Length: 448
Image 1 (tube, rainbow, N blue to C red):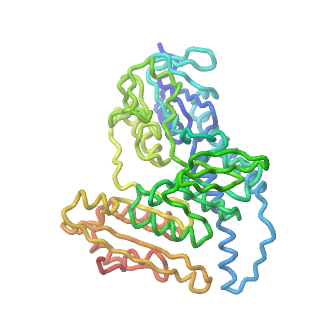
Image 2: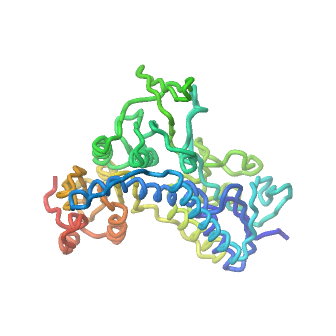
Image 3: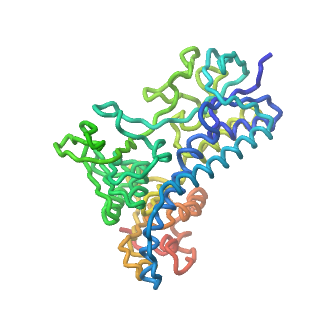
């Protein structure tokens, strides 16, 4: 007889959803979490980042208002007020997650769990047994090893800064890097974004990265491409002196490394099982989240699928359907929309142009770039960009990409159309809402 039918390691989005839904079937469920309920998204990811994005964007909103007749004076931005209000909101959400688990009769262990066998884990010095173990421990920020790495911060650290720096360097070219560069700049920090590659957001459609760099430069961010850090030292004035591989030397008050995340599998005790890992540390599972150890499963950021909260939630539901409702089903990872809350926003769903070229014999590309109606009076030179990719043979829209205000909100509805298999003819036959930014997606007629 096991102590529990299911032991979940990690109380992030996927782990909490799986715990609650499994318990709803009558299963005896426990969840172990060593940090905070809600995982990365609630505590050091999506939610606080979006709150910071909102806060950082006000300075541009105030500036835009002048063209509409508003005499707006900004006297001061108080970082501790935003930080502490954010902390209060996150604490409220932590409490909601705890209540949801308790109301579902899930046993909560606020401690680290170490697997010591196919059905056993060591928690708080005691051996806990479970018929099934689900690993949903997520990922952690990755900082490469180099001279002076001890002086840098990662994205988790930024949410709890005592004070904002005057000068900040953000290292990286992915979505976390460009988001935090925009956040710092919006708060009045002199910000540089350094990336060793030639284009930002290299995994996104190629039309987006270059345009984003231009927009960030126009907003006051120094964007340094093909630039890599050699070393970092701290001088007598407590400044961080960064030496680049190209020989340039600059001083900053803060250096943020946003160079990716890694699956949090270290010290989980997986060596005591048959669980197999990839070279990057992520766990190998089948379509139903089962590892090479039959009693151990894994889902979320730790298995190498798209690292998105809605994906982890969907996986948690699918896991419970298969293991506790005898209704196994695999997740369809195609047509997953995603957004980058940089300034301006970027959102995308479906294939990039490069991916479409590889998969289809002939494609058509529709592009539109323009200054929105709002900025006709604001004197803001921000540009909006939209792109549709169409398979010529079927006329189906297979990729949609956007950079501009509220891109994340707009892309959600378009994701439904893409998932439903909408053709370009359907887009053309759809009457737009005027005057809006989104109407451009149904008025593009000429392929480029």
